[in-house]
View 1: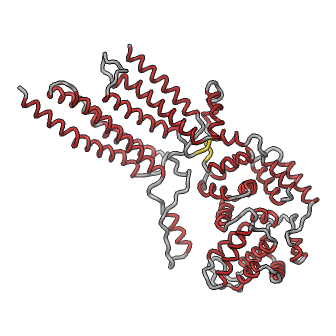
View 2: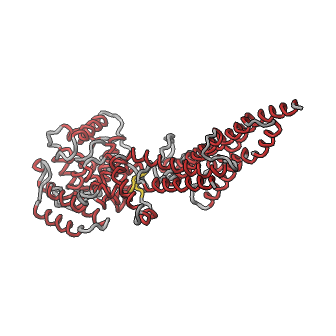
View 3: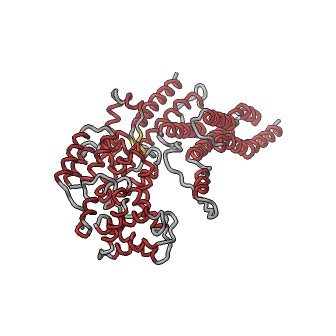
Length: 549
């Protein structure tokens, strides 16, 4: 009866702690949706941010923010569109330093022009007049950029003097306009001038061409005002390259990316987030934008995926689950590190109590006090508690084995100069890393479980060795524990079978290493246990039993 009381008590309190651990909204590889939602309370919404941009006379950015609000179906986006259109008619502002350009060009590049800037510069007459006006500029950076018109060693663009040189000429004209009108940051202007000077001196032009390609890509999607309002927030060519690449990949959802870059004022965190999570980044970005500017800032601060389980919404609808969850919401936002440690301690405490409850039945002999100190039983309980902790924590931690959660870098780059670029690109995309996140996680889990079973078996061997009984009886006790000593093999076979079933059902990607690592670790640990621990003890007991009368 006493054993049953200890068992029920340990299991009950363990389950309570585990439920509390599950409800703590703090995660290693994700940020809880409720934390993001709480951060957006009291901050400007996307529509209000568009209104604020209009007040700052950034009409182009406000127009793009309105498109993002319409994509997210945020209430008030129609009113924002009317407000932006009215402001565009009332506040007709010329480009910066427009007096240095011919008046027809100033009309094309005015803030009220809704055409992409590349389309505005595509006409040969317009482009040539822009270049002619820039040649009269007194800015050294503009003159250095215009010298790129004579480059012939280009690789990504055809030279300007060729029949297909219109794209490069357009990109050079656009870069010159941005510098002339002071529409880019000083650091970016200095870098562009340095790259242009290096290329004009006969150096490598690949980095400069990449900048022109990125400007061309953004200019195809943005009008003059939208492009300049974005470029003033970009400090490095690396940020421009990443942002342009994300823009090409985003397709129709590019307004979301643009709105986030404008609201953040510094798009570097946005670029890092989208590059880290190329598959789910835009979805999480849309969720944060729909909640307000504070939610977007919180997401960029953590640089993690948003975790929003549907089962928890039903669970926190009832007290005391809801009361505990919302109580933990504020500390999880203010002190995420301490909250995560607290969650791990709850998992560890719950697993320990469950192990104690189960151990009071499994590891305690009839009539023995479960609470009495025993080193071997303590070692068995600790190994069981650690096993439960690892399994439970890995089961409830989001994105712990997700292969699509983060971009995996492959350190090897293939360079085949005699092969066509298309073939090289196809070859590079076909090479995939062998050690994925899911494979590495499964290897660690299988290794830890086998190590814990190994410790459990060592504790049992030590317990039998310390007993004050005859050697023949110790041999019989060792024979009785034979199935325990083979538990590593059993667990290894089960892990391999489960892995192969998950692969066949398409739940995880195929990985032979992950599937057979379970059996391999089981064979290794059981072999070490029986050869180096069990065999010497049996030999000693056999010799002692033979010399006894």
